Structure formats: C-alpha cells, structure tokens
Amino acid sequence: MTGGAVLIVDDEAIAVENLSHILAREGYAVSAAASGEEALAILGEREFDLVLTDLRMKGIDGLAVLGESKRLWPDTEVVVMTGHATVATAVEAMRLGACHYLTKPYGLAEVRATVAEAMDKRRLRLEVARLSRQVAELGRTPLIIGESPAVQALKDNIHHIAPTDSTVLILGETGTGKELVARAIHESSLRNDRRFLAINCGAFNEDLLANELFGHEKGAFSGASTLKKGLLEVAGEGTLFLDEIGEMSLTMQVRLLRVLQERHFFRVGGTQEIPVAARLLAATNKDLKGDVERGLFRADLYYRLNVITLRVPPLSGRRQDIPLLAGYFIAKYAAAMGKKLSGFSAEAVRRLMAYEYPGNIRELENIVQRTVIMAKGDVIEAGDLPQDLSGDAPLLVKHEAPPLVTLEELERRHIRDVLAACDGNKTRAAEILGIDRVSLWRKAKRLGLDEA
Image 1 (cartoon, helix red, strand yellow):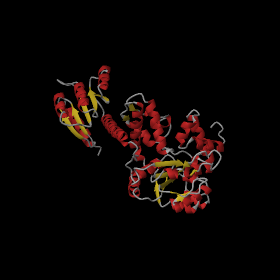
Image 2 (cartoon, one colour; image 1 turned 135 degrees about the vertical axis):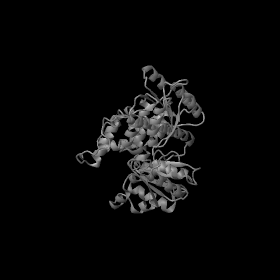
Image 3 (spheres, helix red, strand yellow; image 1 turned 90 degrees about the vertical axis):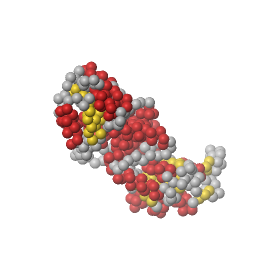
Image 4 (cartoon, helix red, strand yellow; image 1 turned 45 degrees about the vertical axis):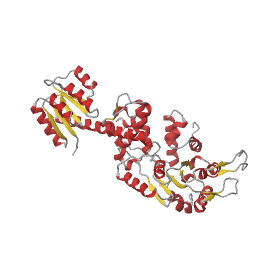
C-alpha cells in the first residue's frame, strides 16, 4: 500500500468517481468534494497530503482552492487539473504553489506518476523540515541518521557500551563516520560533561605524535621553552579518540600499550608519572587483524584495543538511509547558505539511491553540498546533480573488470583526481579525502605527485 490522504475536488461526478477508483487501488485514503465551497469546508477541518483540484468550477474555482489550501496547510501538495489549459493559467497555478498541472483528458499512468511524485515531494519536504529542526537543536550532540537494520544495530550497540569505560575499536571504510560514532559514544556516556578530544595518528611522524599525546617538559629538547601537556593529560576524565590507529609506528604502539596497561605515562623529558583518567576510543579503516598476522601491528595492543568492536556499515550496506542522509545534508547546507530548498525531486532521489558512493557518507555530503550551492530552484532536480549522477553516466551497472592495478596506483589516481577536481586547492582536497594537509603532503610525496 502506498499510503497518504488525497482530496479530489471536481464538479464532474464521473471525474471524481474515476480518480477515486484509481487512487484507492493505489492505496491512498481518498476524500472528495463536489465544489470549491465544499473543498474549503473540508480543508478547514483537516490536512491532506495532496489536493487534486479541477481548475474551472462554478463559484469558487481551482485557483482559489489552491491558494486557500496553501494558506491553511503550506506543506500540502496541490495538483491542478483542467481541460482548458492555457499558458497563463499554468503560470498562475505554479506561482500560487501548485506542484503539477494535469491537462484533461489524462492517462491513468500519468495520474499515478504525478500523484506518486507529489507524495514523494511532500515526504521529502517534511523530512527536511524535521532534520532542519534537529540541526538547530543539536548543538554539539552528534546525530547518527538512519533507519536501516545495520544502523539500528549500531545505535543499539552504542547505547549498551557507552555507559561503560571499556576501550572500543571502531572499524569502517573511509568516509563512513567513525569519528561521529566515537562522539556518539562519548555523548551517551557518563563522561558527556567532560572533554572529547580527537587526534589523527596518521597525520604525525613518531616524534610529533609522541609530543601530541604525552606532551613535554620545559627544556626536554631544543625549542621546548615551556611545559606542554599532552592530549592524554588534557583530556582529563573525558574521552580521547585515536583515529587511524593503524598508522601508528611499532615504537609508538609499545608506548600506547604501556599507557593502557599501567594507566599512566611520562611527558617527553619528564620523570613524574602522569595518571590517565580518560577513556580511549580508537578507529581504523585497516584490517588490523591482518596487520597483526603480517607483523605490522602488535598483537598485544590489538587485543587491548579490541575489548569491544563496532563496525560502521558502508553506505552501500544501508542504501535505504540515503534519502534521510541527503535530507539532513540539504537542511544543513541550505541553512548555512541562506537558501530555501524543500528537497529533491523523485528522479533526483532515484539517482542518489542508485549511485555506488565509493567515498561513503562523506562523498554523499560533498555531492549534496555542491548541489545546494548550484541549485537554482526550490527543489533539487536530477539535472542539478553532478554529471556522474545526472543520467549521462551509468549507475550501478557492472562493467567488464578493468586491468588490475596495485593499491598504490589506485591511491595515486584517486588523490590526483581529487586534486584536479579541487583546482589544486590542497586544503579542500585533504578535506574530501578525509585527511589533513600534512597527511596529503606525505602521501603525495610518497606517490610521486609533485603538484601536491
């Protein structure tokens, strides 16, 4: 069943009867009015998802019904029908807020498609409004959006582990929102009134990472003119999130293991034990278990971190959440840019749903942000989407496998393409790639991308 309440307004009884039969079979709850006056009386009592109104009626006509419907219920969609279509009336109907214009006689398929698209538009508008309110109310509280089974299971796991002090290892592909999960754990924990600090372990060499985590004493090395507290100390009784833990050197792994075992550390150049009160969360997009077997990651540290494991699903594993996520991002960026956007057309949603998203949620967010910037109307149409999603490129179509290349070559090509798309803007490229400028510089140097 499709669902949704529809009001049909027409002074021709046969037209009302036919439309009611068609829409009732599609699963809609149908009401009818034989005149504009009756329609306004009904609309004064209750809200409908959709009003289908004839244009020419004795007394109160379809344009008046349209105007009053939008005044009483701004989110109700209105479709105007007429056998006397003119450009002027069509323009006036659209100006007053009609979402579609049907010319009599119309085909059954056309009616079904028009009503379905109007319902989709209303649902998206309501979802955008709901998410806009949440964006305004959220403050710093993270929001994990989704109703798919995979996301519901993730939320349930967060709910159960958040009140504990257990170390958590968060696994997931790049762009899936691992830091958001870490923040959700913190905000749902008993430490939520304390600090949440995050550090990207892949953004620093060994010495710099040690300095960031442990801090240093005054005079510990050349240039250490003052004492510096490390993140393990600054976090206090809050939460410290170690992102890209798989990039940590073996030497640093030993030092972190000692912290987890003994719950204290020394500043660089120091002799005084500093107690660790913070809860530690870690994340990686690597196969840490495989790295342990290959000798790239210490087994003892792996098991210390892996007290509880959370796996963040890729976007391809939660495809039904794409409209919700897209609605959240359109609310976020439309508000930031001062634009009034009611949502996506049905075809735009279909194309968003069909795309594969190798960059996961981060890629979806970038697509929506770019689309909001470029959007010209109040609804994002399929043609407003980037070319890969516009219909000019095939979506979710399996092609013959390309020649196999090394992971290093794939990484080189991807970084090169992102830099090109950003016109060489390294800060923006690093943001899209999910790393910082230092990591981008290191990777570009290693891969021979001199232009980075």
